[in-house]
Amino acid sequence: MTQGEKLRQIRKSKKLSAKVVGSKINISQAYLSKIENDLVIPSNQVLYSLLDFYDLSLLQFLNQLDDSRATIEYTELINEAKHLTAEQQHYFTLFMKSLKLQQKK
Picture 1 (tube, rainbow, N blue to C red):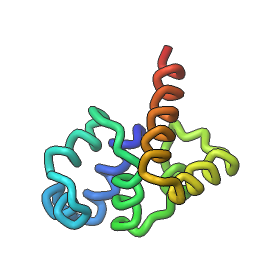
Picture 2: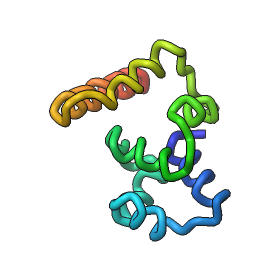
Picture 3: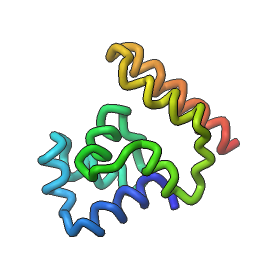
């Protein structure tokens, strides 16, 4: 199960519409749909907002993904990213996306 599929499953299990979730975390319903369909990778801020709204920690979420190979070190790295400046988060996100692209090759 992909990240987007899992986020959709969580939302639906809580019987929430994409419109409600989007409005609660200040993103559009269309953008949430793109996240749930794996058309975009959410920023760290959006992912943390979703997980917070769903009352899940990042580790809990990663452990629910079938394809997750999250280690404690990886999870700690992501948790530390919360304390980065906006510019640092931007570069961290770009770096993480580049790793994901390399895995697909």
